[in-house]
Amino acid sequence: MSELVYLDSHCHLFSDEFDKDREAVFDRAREAGVLFLNIMCTSVEEAIEAMAYSEQDPEHIKVSCGVFPTDVNELDEETWNRFERVMRDERCTCIGEIGLDYYWEKEEANRAKQRELFIRQIALANEVNKPICVHSRDAIQDTFDIMKEHRCHGLMHSFSGSEEMGKEFVKLGYYLSLGGPVTFKNARHAREVVTSMDVSYLLSETDSPYMAPEPVRGTRNEPANIPYITARMAECRGVSTEELSKQIIDNWHRFLELK
Ligand SMILES: [Zn+2]
Image (cartoon, rainbow, N blue to C red; front, side, top):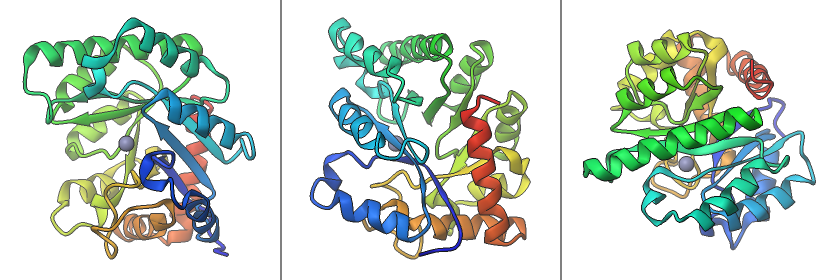
């Protein structure tokens, strides 16, 4: 068992990819010291399973649920109502992942619908007093503009914007979560963000099953890989992994308290 304690602020552990060995994945996470998990759910079905699971250990295992931006086309009112019920459930800690994805959607009409849905989910998060977990791909400026106008409490998942943009988000009180890319050779931006940001606003994540870090890049990712990411982040900042992992857990608790 690891002596250090780590956070994975973004893992899709109830997606199909983990159906065959989910318990083993949870066991390996615990073994590696990755005790704090935020399980992301992009469907109501996943969220129902994850919320039931989290009841075993609500202090460490959090659940997030929200309508993913590119799912906006299939979203009818009935589906929205089912999502809303979950998002209001007290076992659902964060609203997410929500946001904007212009990489997969090139049409302006669809992008406009994504923005509308994003704003709608921010309003709900504010109403129920929960933080949001934001997905932003090829849409950082629009994401920022919306989060500036519609202030809320939240984190940027797998933040891939520039250092300057990162600072703008932090100025508004938003947290930046970093994952596998900080270990990739070509991801200079991510490391610059890690190095230059106010350390109180940094969080760590895997985005499992995606984005496995070096040296296991290309495999199915899982929370037990967080130590690779935290160690690389600590190296960037010139501090020990122990110091940074503690700081990240403090940050996570503050984040959950909406501070
Ligand atoms: Zn995700």
